[in-house]
Image (cartoon, rainbow over all chains, first blue to last red; front, side, top):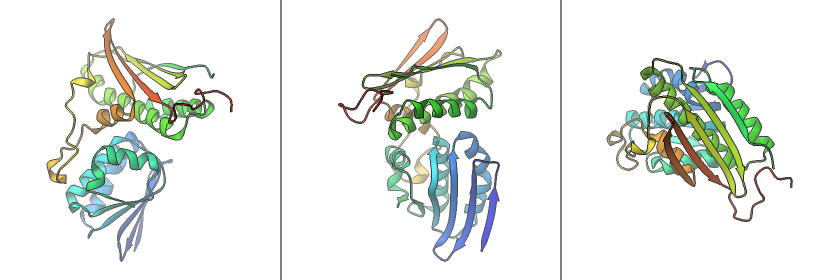
Length: 108
Length: 150
């Protein structure tokens, strides 16, 4: 199953239902404005999903703290260890570590 | 060395996008390394969005900001001045960064991460304005000065 949720550029995400879990491919700059538009529909999608949920960040160049909040809310919905961040940029990986989220979220 | 970036602008709900685009152009021209460029963009994002969320609703007049990015021999200095209500970011308690997910409150990470990504930060309340200064160091002590030609 593949469903798409697109917002105005430069942000959009695509949801893939896979056997390994729900794969959500994010793109562009996940800044405060983008995350505030994206949070509700994304969390709605996740609320109904069976864990794990995977965020693919290969095409994400920037995140604001608002995205870390979305990840924390996702972890609160799914439980510790059920959110995977795939291909985070080294700078993005660093902020997750400083925030202490690397103990709750798999950084791949 | 490249000239400092200086921009004065009113705080509006949509001021961040154009500001960050200008900042990215300047960071690229100044040949700032990706980790420092990311930290500078992150700091601007968090400081300005914090003002949008908390200062603007509590102020009955327009708020104006002045952003300066100044190359230094060993890194970069960011100065953000605003004429909004007094707000000392150091008075905000640090968020909980350990423990189970359900024990961690949502929020409070932005300023915490901004300060942790900087080598040093200082807040001043002067002439009825808030002044936040953050210093970002180059990765290597022997790195060429920011904005210098290779």
